[in-house]
Every structure is written in structure tokens, then in C-alpha cells.
Image (cartoon, rainbow over the protein chains, first blue to last red):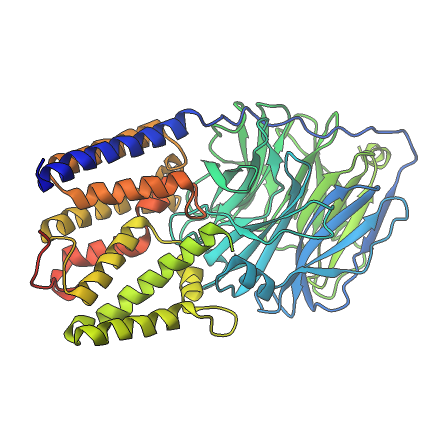
Length: 384
Length: 200
């Protein structure tokens, strides 16, 4: 055979083999199989409980974007970012541990600095941003955090660290690849979930030219292996997803479009494969993050800024029909009795229920502290 | 260091070397001087200055590069070092049209303009694979072997997980090669001029 013949038929054989490998990969990939069952809490009858405290902060002038997970030994572990100001190169991600029994937070300590991220990601990193924490199917604590190499938050990428010892030590960070455009403009704010096949469903959003939400699917090693679009265009971000069954879930998104400023809602009835187009709820939204959780046995709770223009009010709304109608049952901030922060901004709420049934809300308090509110079902019943 | 970090840094380093060799028009130098300059450039690109190497700074901006960019960068290095063009004009023109078409299909929709997201197809879609197979077979039929070669190399790299991404699009195309294709097609005179010699 001539050289041209070898090139012609050899390239065809190589092409056939390469595509055989690609087709086998696609045809043998497992499907997500819907959302994994949610944690159930045993709710003991008790007296109403409602308490609030500020988390320790001995160094950072500015803190923001708290996230938390329940860990072993009846504790919560919270994370947030702090530094001289948002976007500064000295911003680090901090952690503190809360004892559910003793009801106090440990002194904060640094988990990730810009220098640490830069060294282990083996690329330049200019600043750090939002962390969110969750668990994978092996029960390991997974910390996702935003980093930026060039530009503002529109230049963000998401990274993942894993802890096998409830957050005492961490694996080196790994970069998640979620965008074809230099992998920039992917951020996190909502809590990660699990699919039935053990993969993770991570709500993310993009801010480069458009503003829209997606649900990223991650494998056991933290590689993005799929994604579904939750919205499109230029006005929706920071999705929070709350499943009710393996097939049914509701999602809420921050709204950054034209008036009226309202929280957006999306729904799925096939385990997150398809989502309804986003529509406005009756609840206002001043272009600010929201938090939501479905309590064991219902109802659905939502923490949000109850205003169209500012973040000076942070409220709790309750829905008994999985997000169709809402009733505001409490103001965390913004009423005349609460102590006002020097900068009256209360934002970026994170809400979760622990195994004992108590609800925990963490949020940015005046940009200078993270505040923790804990209440139980008895208190919530008293507000209905 | 994880294998995909090594591949990623090598790719960004190769791009830096190709850019440096092309900008200084290495092939005008005597042969020995070309190799000496490339060796010095390789040291400058891969040896860390402080915490990071030049390749790591480039990777911070671009992320891991597609096989299309790497093949182009490798061909540019060889052209500057040996004076031999590996990618003929016909292949390059076809490649540029293909990259530009793919970029027009991919980037606007990936930036959230509509509910349709072609990027998500790259995680594993029979339809996407079949379309790619048809395009590659058409290139093979037209004897555009560089396109066939790039697709094969990208597929193999994807199958072994050479880079951080598990999306086939990221192995096939990136914004740099898209911009290159656009400039090359719109203003061919200002992009790398082909050396006189052609591949066999």
C-alpha cells in the first residue's frame, strides 16, 4: 500500500476506534435517577425555642455568604468568606463549629486562602468568593468555593475540596469545568443535593453577559458530567433547589431584571431533567439571594429580603402548598425591636434543618458579622 | 501533581512557546540559534517565578486548552523551528470554517441566550456524537486529514480524561482558536504567513 493509502485507510480505522470509544462511553453512562431521599428529622415535642447570636470574627473587616452543614457529635460547621473588603486579595474562607448542646460557636479559623488555592490549583488566583457546603454519597463533606483569576465576579470559576474528617482537614482543591468560555463565570450560592445514583446536583449560575441558573451534575470525584439549564437570559441567578420527592422539586432564584422585582420560581416533575420556565412569585426581591428548605413533613420555608429596593429587612415565609402561596411569619431583621447593624444590610441567607428537627438560619449581618438564628417547630407553630 | 494538571500546564506552555516563536519570527535565525532560543523560552515558561510559572499564569486566564489550539501551537513551533509547514492552506482554511461554525453554534447559546444549551451535549449525547462523526467523515472523504487527526486526538484525550473537563466540546474547541479562525478568515493577511515549503 502507498503512503497515501496508509494515511487514508489508517485514519479511517483510527477514527472508527475513537468513535467506538465515545459511543461506548455515552451508552454506558448511568442516568441520575431522580433526587435522592432527603434527610428526615425526628421532631420531639418541646417548648418553643428561638435564639440568635453573632458568629466569632476576630480579624475580617468584611464577611459575607455563610453556609453550613450538620456534622458528627451534634454540631454544625459553618463557612463564610471574609477579608478587608469583598473582592480583596486577602479574602479567605473561614470556618467555625457550633455545638447544638452547648449552643456556642468556636473561634473561627481559616480554611482556604488565595495563596493556598493558587498553589494547589496550579494557576493564578486573584480573589476568593462564595462557599457552599454539602455531602457526597460517601458522606464526605464537600466545600465548593468561587475563585477569580481575571476580572470581577463574572470571571469566576468553582472549586471543590473534600474532607473525610468533618472539616478538620481538606483535600487539595479541584477546579470544576462548567463553561466553554475559558471556564469563567460560574458561581455557587445554593445548597448541593444528591441524585439517586450517587452523583451530586450543584445549583450554579453564570454572570458573563447573561445571568442564568443551571443544575450541574458532578461525579464521585467532583468532575462535572452533566448539566441542565434552569433559566436563561439576563435576569435570574443564585438558584436554590428544594426536592419533595425523587421526581418533584421546586427552585427559587434571585431576580435581576425589570420591575416588578420578584423572586423567581421553577419546577421539575421528572427528577431535574426538565424545568418549567421561571415565573415571578408574589414575594419581592431586591436583587438579593434567598434561602429555602422543606421541613420534614412540611412546610416549605423561605428566607428573603421582604422589599423591592434594599436589604434592610430579612423575613421568613412559609408555604403549605409547596410554593404556590406564601405567608410571611417572622422578621429576622428590620423591625423596630431588632438591634440594627452599623450598615443595615441583612443578606445571603442559608437555611437548613438539623437531625433533631431544629431550623438554623445564617446570614450576613451588616457585612461585618455572620448571624445565626436557631428555632424549633414549636416556635414555628406559634407563629402560624 | 495530578496528570491533568501536568497536561494542562504543558498545553499552556506550548501555546506560550508558539506565541513567542511566532512573534520573534524564529525561523529567520540560524538553525542552532532557533533551538537555543526555544530552550531558553521553555525554561522561562515552565520554571516558576515566585509561586507560579508563566504557564500557570496563562492557565489561570485560559484554563486548559483544546486539542485544536494545541495542534495549531505545535504546528507553529515546528514551522518556526524547522521551517516546515505541517498544515496546508486547504486544510487550514477548512479548519477555520469548521471552528468558526462551531463557535457560532456554541458560544452565544452557552452564554444563556436561549433555553437551548449545546455545551451540555458535550457531556454525553448520541446526537452530538453522531453530528461530529458525520462532519469528521465528510472531512475524511474530502481528504482533509488534519481535521480527522484533531478529532481523533481530542476524542482520545477526552476518553482518558487528559484535562479537568469531562465535556467533549472542551477538547475540540476553545475561544482562542475561534478568534484565530475568525481573524484568519476575515483578514488573512495579518495572521501568520505560511512558510514557502508545504507538507508532502
